[in-house]
Length: 159
Image (cartoon, rainbow, N blue to C red; front, top):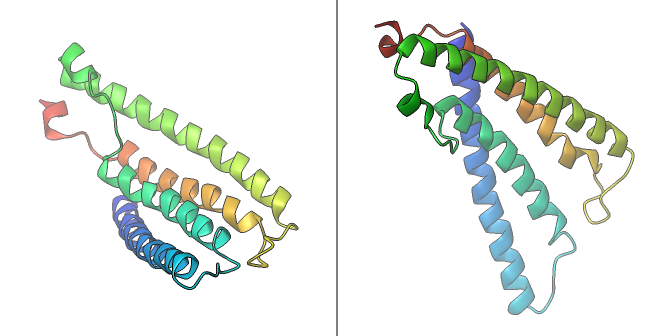
């Protein structure tokens, strides 16, 4: 059940990130067109694209965690040949990532809470909405890593 929830959250986050990147391309294109062709800049030219960029980056990281496509060195399999030992290292790594995500999410929540009463001047929305992307994405990513932590060992690790 946790694996299925993880896959669903990853799919939703990938779709959200794709739509956000498309929106970002449209916004930036419009701002460039307005600035250099119309000789006027929209009042939201800096804040709205930054808000979309931050949310798309953090939510897109959920899909990267699910697909295990984050950049990593991958040297451990060359040093440790025993599949069972590699599996133990993988589980410890997942546990440490979860602890780190919880700490990072909590810090992000505190920052979002601290800035909720401040507003972005051009958008007239709370500044905390920018920082809320971090704890939101961390919470979803924790679910993904919990599913990976409790997933059965791979076939190579059980041989």
